[in-house]
Image (cartoon, rainbow, N blue to C red; front, side):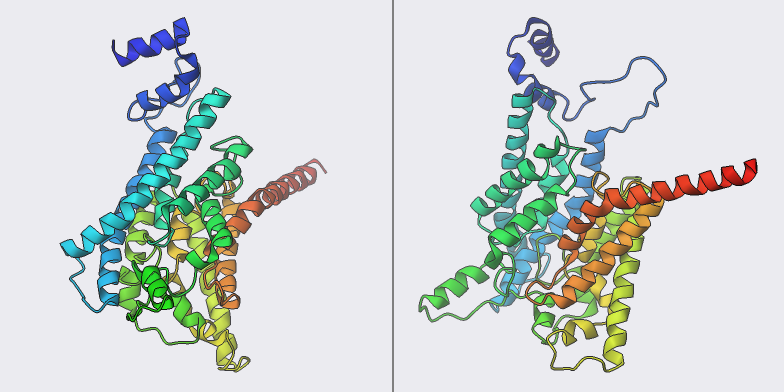
Length: 399
């Protein structure tokens, strides 16, 4: 019996009807949606939610592959046994460490989606196709798998399902998962020992009395927050040969992904551009404060304040967050003017948090989540402003 016959039996005869959402999800994964229009005035196109999500996943694949190479490269650099970046040693270590993160993210996340679909009797939603790929790319490589599983369950249930599922959530699910990890397990999400494979294990061995050399797993932001000089060149920061979350280090690949999403009309160029402008404005303001001598060099904020304003675009998770998360069409502003305001504030607040919170020298996650909450308010006032202007013009014509 073929898939179509089985689907017919489920629909017409009620055989295993409870499992219809799960069956339909597998049946339509690479094919047409389960529900299509057949009559009436509809705009017919080849794209749908599933294909849109798969396009974003394709844009993430280069970051994933680069992250695998970089994970091994950073590990061998840290232990004093450097290897070529494009080597089997680097890639094999990255595969061993990162593939389990991807598997856990998808298995646990889609498992929760299927459970809710069966309980509620609705179709399985495709929103987690992107979230499942984003999550492994925004966490440290050595994060325990059970922590990741717990965070994914929290993010899918609290961040999306309680609001009604895909298209109804007010917070970006991937960032909700990372926020849960940050506040629930802070020692695994910040500090100077979590960003290079093996650094946490080596630190624990040293703490236990073992006579071993330490592995430094500090990011550039962590170094700057402590008032130290950065040992990486602009080229390293741009191309991504630095420690950090799995997929966020290569600004070059993220830039290419952003152009791809803009070209495919999935990502909003207004949000991306305005976020960059907001970050540059905040960076320039801080540079101006330093140049004016209004802050002492001994201050804990001095190092990040004095960082070249445009360097903020190359370090940390700013570029990744702006391209892949700030542009989430569900949680971002919907109006064109609202997108400019929304993006500008994300960039502005990201650098503000980055500088004034040395304990967590990264701000894009919190900035995006904050603006997710305010996006409907921004759109409301934009729409109301348009209504008032139209009424004013109408009143002027009738006088």
